[in-house]
Length: 76
Image (cartoon, rainbow, N blue to C red):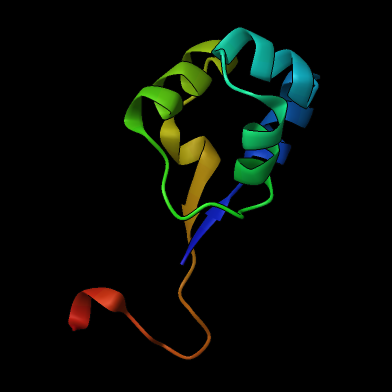
């Protein structure tokens, strides 16, 4: 599964979620959903904007962690 580490990057940058939302140009609510992992997809344009503002790589925000049950959607 993919884990969102946006909160960690924001803390490292000493930036608040609403400040990032304003600079990226998306709503605070949508960014909050992303931060808490309550989204099923992320547009590359949004990821690009977040990485530009935070001066980071996508891998700083997204992390792959193997599911406990070993289920892998790509094996279907």
